[in-house]
Image 1 (cartoon, rainbow, N blue to C red):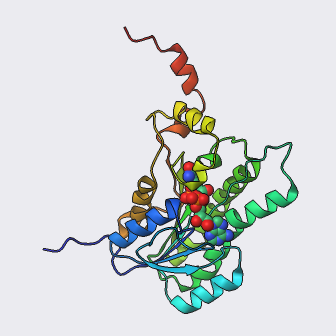
Image 2 (image 1 turned 180 degrees about the vertical axis):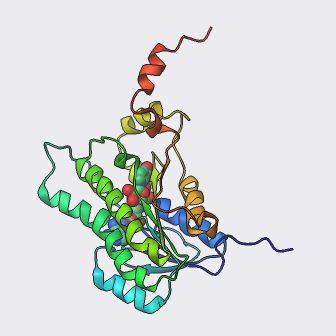
Amino acid sequence: MRRVLRVEGRTVVVTGAAGGIGLAMVRALAAEGAKVVAVDRSEPQEDPGAEFRLLDVTEPGQWRALAADLGRVDGLVNNAGVTWRARIDEVRPQDMARVHAVNVTGPLLGMQHLAPVMPPGSSIVNVGSLAALTAHYPVAYTTSKWALRGLSATACLEYGPRGIRVNTVHPGFIETPMTGSAPEAFRTASIAETPLGRTGTPAEIAALVVFLISPESSYITGAEIPVDGGHSAHGGVKSLSDALREPAT
Ligand code: NAD
C-alpha cells in the first residue's frame, strides 16, 4: 500500500529557496507530496526539484503577480534572509533599512499578498533565528529577527480566525552559505555554547517545517520553536557549567 504523503495536494511557496536552508525545505516538502513553488532573487545553485521562480521578497508587485498566478496557496515559508555583521557602533541607517527590508518587510509582504488566497487549514512558517532569542552582535540582523517575532505573533492573532496558522522556527548555527561566510571563530564559539556539541544541517530545519506545514500540527499556532542543539536553553551559562564540571577521571 502506498505511504500517505504528509503534505500531498498542498501548494507551498518557499522564499530564499535557491540554496541553504530554503533548498532543503523545498526538497523535504516535495518529497512529502507538496506542489512547491520555490522563489528567490537569485537563480538556484542546484536543481531544486520543484518549480522555481525569480522573486525579490521586498517587491510588492512581484508578490501580487505570484498570488494572481497561483490563485490558491496552502503554505508559505518566509525563509529568505540576509545578514550584515556590523556591530552597534558601526552600523549605518542604510544597513538597518536593507536588512529589515528583506527580513521583516519581506515576510510581511508575503503574508499580505498570499493570505487572501489561503483557505482555512493553511499554514505559514516564518524563519527567525537564535539571534531573535538572545543578544547577538550583528545588530541589524538581530533587531530584524526580533521584529519578525512581533510580526509573527501579530499575524497569528489576525489570521487565526481565518483558520490560517502562523509559527516561527528559530535555527541555531546551521551549515549553509550564510554561515560559511562567517569567521571560523564564530563556528567554534557556537559549538562551544551548544549542548549537543555540533552545528545543525538544513535538513534538520526542513523536517520541522514539513510538520508545521502539514495538518499534523493543526492546533499549533503562534509557537516559536528553536532548532539549535539546545543553544538557547541555557541562557548563556553553559560556559559556567563547563568550567565547574569535574574533570573526567
Ligand atoms: P543563505 O544565505 O544560504 O540563503 C538565503 C537565501 O535567501 C539566498 O538564496 C538568497 O538569494 C535569498 N534571498 C536574500 N534576499 C532575498 C530577497 N530579497 N528576495 C528573495 N530571496 C532572497 O541563508 P540560510 O543560512 O539558508 O538562511 C535561511 C534563513 O535562515 C534566513 O532567514 C536566515 O536568517 C535564517 N537563519 C539561518 C541560520 C544559519 O545558521 N544558517 C541561523 C539562523 C537563522
